[in-house]
Length: 382
Ligand code: GN1
Ligand code: MG
View 1: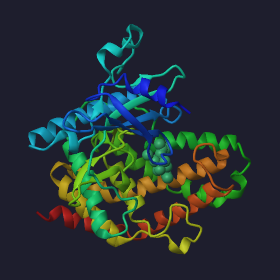
View 2 (view 1 turned 180 degrees about the horizontal axis):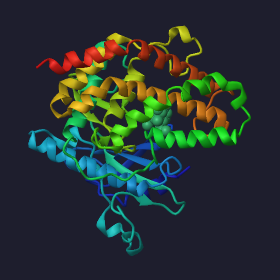
View 3 (view 1 turned 90 degrees about the vertical axis):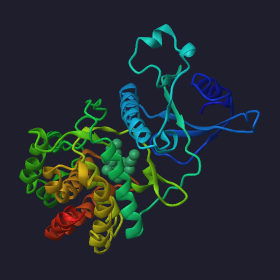
View 4 (view 1 turned 180 degrees about the vertical axis):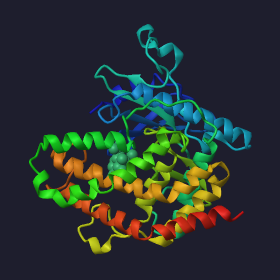
């Protein structure tokens, strides 16, 4: 725990409008510690608010690389918003830089040094502007909201469609199934928790889909599917809306990397369309809602159609199967490894997640022809 005085000293290294007044904890983040900083009122009584985060360097071993990714991506988005006559301070996350005079000669030697502060305990801190008057949703519980979520990510990706600089790979092989399969082989060989013998059926689910999943990834490797900016955490709570209910800005850019943008579509479908929970014990509740699939896809394509290339459109529906398969694999792998990656609430939790996500995958496989038809139809419309 940091004292208020320590937090104030950290904040004093960043370029705020005026001096910080209060610093308060915000929300129950699982990964980073998040605080909200308010400045003293200026002569007109105006107060600016900022987000202060301690970035979790166990999850993100390369915080400077991560901050550089965020800086490059938001720099590009700001230019786009300005060109369109929008307000970049409200429509794009604004990274707050260090005060130049607070940067020591030693700090200046490291990459991205004006984007974060590393304290005496080795923890990394970064700040961004708080976007006033925005609205968030925890769950997309209607097709109308799924449409808006699709619009949010579609717009984000569309603005980044001409971004070509490679980003730092801050989590190795995140959606690279070839890499995941090499981890898988090691997991099976190690069998660290002695659980492999009890999950023969589940192992079969993975092995029987290996070729089709590798075939999809080959399209990324051979350039058929272009490499673009991916957000990698496309849940609805990472989109800010304005009071009128329109998309304002996509937040939580910590996992931004370079890959196929289909990952973001696929992961959104995995989360938005599930009629049950990710870890439902009652498999009867788990399925893919076609209504939610249609709504999300319609919202996504309303923003993204003009920047999507043919190979991306052709593989859009499959990406939902790909990402859901990968999630089955990751949960099962963690179960066999003895629950070392995901937080679990009970001993079988990762196995329950594996089975629930597999049920969702099966539901997608059953409805695949219709999913493809929906994409095709939407691609045809003006
Ligand atoms: C993790 O913690 P959360 O919900 O942001 C994971 C995702 C998984 C998800 C499954 C960095 O995301 O890839 O899809 O759990 N994030 C990381 O619930 O591994
Ligand atoms: Mg996240």
